[in-house]
Length: 411
Image 1 (tube, rainbow, N blue to C red):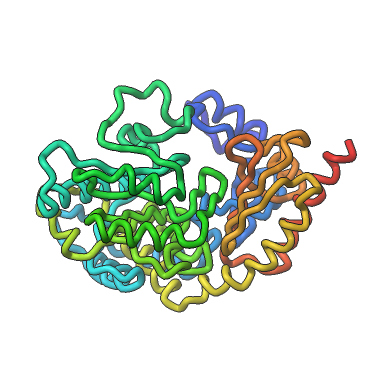
Image 2 (spheres, one colour; image 1 turned 90 degrees about the vertical axis):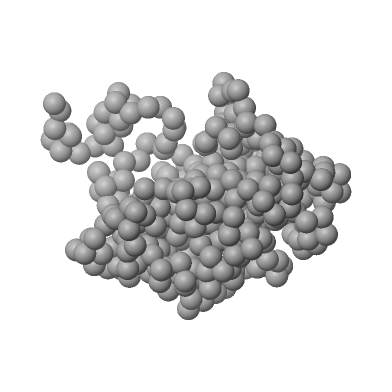
C-alpha cells in the first residue's frame, strides 16, 4: 500500500495520485490545499490563496473559525453519534434556536443539501395527501428552469443541465419546470394536484441569477391563494450570504418550507435541515423519515454554534455593508472583459466576454494571482468569499480579476 504521506510535496504529485485513484466527477483547478485559516488557504508547495469561493457558501464564516472549531473540539470529547434511536443533549437546543432564527416552529435535521431537498419534497407530497386531499400518487410540484437542488436521481430528474441529467434515467415523474421568475407561467402550471413550488430565491449554480423585484412576494401570494406550499431552497443563499439571514428576507417573504445546509455545518461537518411550521411538519411521524447521522450531537453542536453567530446579526450586516464595494468594483469592469454582473450581499455572478476567455480560463488566471474562484456555464464565474473578508481583501479579489482581464485583452 502506498504511503501518501511520503509523496513529494508538490501539487503535481498529489494531483497525479488523485487522478489515478479517485473518480473523475470534478475538474478542479491545479491547487492542492494543505492548510486553511480565515479567508486564506495554503497549498502543499506553500503558495497562499484568497478563497473567494468559500466552499460554495459552506464556509460563510471562513476556514476553521475559532468559535466553530472550539464547539467541535468540545463535543468530540463528549459524544459524536447516538443515532436517533436515542435522544442527545445537543439536538433540542440546536433545533430550538435554528427554528427561532428562521421563524419556524420545527426543524428536521439531515446531513447534506440534497438530503434536505429530498426531505422537503417528501414533506410536501405527504402534506398534499394528508392535508390538502390530493389523490394518492398524483402530487405535483412546480420547479424552475435552470434549477440546481442536488444530485440525487429524483432531483436530477427535473434538472435541465445535461451534465447533471443525462444518462441517469428512468426519471422520477411529478414535476413541471417553468421559466425562473415567471409568475404567469407558475400560475398556469398550477393544478388541483399541485402541492408545492420549489424555488431558489437566487439561483447559485446558474450564475447567481437574481429574480426581478416582486417575484418572491408575488409567488408567496400565489401559493397562499392556491393552497400550495412555497419551498425556498436557501442552501447556498441562506445564513448570511446575501446580507440577510435568508435571501427571502430581502423582500420580507416567508416561505412555508426552508431547506438549509452548507454554511450550517460551519465548513466542519455536513449539516442540513428542513424548517417548517407544525401544521406542515406534523405529517412526519415516527418511522416515516429518518437518517442515522441526521441530528447527531457533533453536527448539532457545530450547527448550534453557527446559529449563535448568526443571532448576533454581525455576519449578515458585514455582507450587507460590503455589497456596495463589491458591486461597484465589479461593475467597473463591464466593457473591460465583463459583459454583466449580478451582486447580492457577498455573492456575485460575473459574465465574462466569451470572445475574451472562458470562465474556467478566468479562474485559472485568478489562481495564478492568488485568488480561488469557480466557473459555471461556460463564461460565467462565481465569487462568494467568506463573510469574514475585509474590505481590503475584497478589493484584492476585484483587482486580481481586473488584472486577468487586462492581460487577456492585451495578449
